[in-house]
Structure formats: C-alpha cells, structure tokens
Image (cartoon, rainbow, N blue to C red; front, side, top):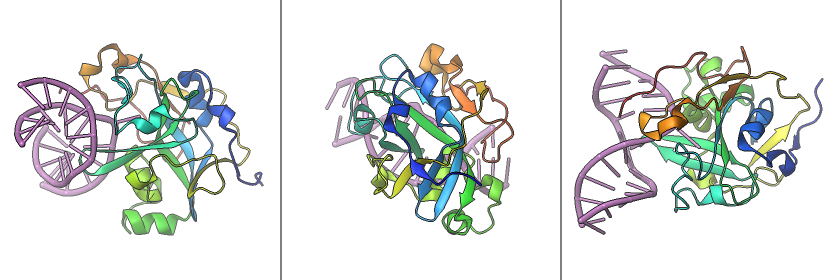
Length: 207
DNA sequence: GGGGGGATTCGG
DNA sequence: CGAATCCCCCCG
C-alpha cells in the first residue's frame, strides 16, 4: 500500500536545478484517469546553460520558464512532438526539469487510445514526446499550475522517495553547438525502471 | 518577410 | 539513417 496521492509542496522545486531534478524522480504525474511515475528527467538551467531555451532570455515561447515554480512548461519541437517541463527555481533563474520518461500507472487504455492501440506498455511513456502524447499534453497546457489539485495536470507524491543514488549521464539530443553544455551530467533516471527512454548514451549529432 | 534549426520519433 | 513537419526565433 502506498500513501494517497497529494500535490507536491512547491518548495521542493526551489534551489539549484541540478539538485532539484533528481528529487522529482518517483513522483507521479496525473492527468485525469491517466498517471505515470517519473523515472527519467533532465535539468535545464537559465542564462548559464547554453542548452536551455532560457539561455538567450525571455521570449514568447519560453515565457513560462520565467514565471513561478511549479508551472508546466510545454514546447513544440520537430514539427510534431511536445515536451513537458516542470518550472523550478524562484521565478528569476528560469530553470526547468524536462520530463523524459514515465512508468505508466493508471489509465493505460486511455494512453493507448491517444498513442495507438499497438503500442506496448513499456513504450507508452518512454521519451519526452511519447509521454506528452500518452497524457494528452500539448501547447494548450503550457503555464498550468502543477501544484494545484484543481489543475487538469497535477504533480503528486504517493510517498515513494526518490532513489538514493539515481543513474546519471549527459543530456540527450543536444547538438555540438551548445558547447560545453553537451557534456554536463544533468540527466537522471531510476535504474531499471520501465519508461526510461534509453539506457546508454549516443554521441551527439553534428548539425 | 523569410530562412533555418530543433531538449524527437518512427520506419526502412 | 533520414524523413516528417511547423513553431518560433532571429536577422535583415
């Protein structure tokens, strides 16, 4: 038996983004009847992180990153996929944690309705684009308060603590043009968990 | 007003 | 490995 689902305390999101990111592991993201446990994340800093959308300052797209912590930052990429982040920091650092993988917990039928009936459980939410698709998250959800029980999408704890020693690697999908940010060990995941997008890194692509 | 790149995914 | 596909940033 696990504790009842309750929205997280926003204070959990304050502090250095690289320390905050692994603390989100094992939390639960809920949208209606669908929910999944967060098993893979990446930290994105603000003006000091060339890989962050916030690196070059506030724009229309990244405005949510510059708002209060606990909001959902959603962006659209590659012309077809959405990615979801939890805004962290104190509203001045524009830091966020990218959600890269969930273990599906409930509402798998609804996820499969969105993603396709033939998708196996282990791939339903394995990847930032896949989890948004499975949970029905798109740009219309950008800016939503994840810490309010009234919101359509809520970030919850069921009492399971984050792993004492999460797996760590460089972030996935960054190009060489982000300079030294490519190698920063800012990706964290729960070893062996279903929903982790990939176990090992691939070298960055030249672009 | 237009060009180009992207925190991805899937199929061949 | 490369196409799909479009928002949005940025430059002029």
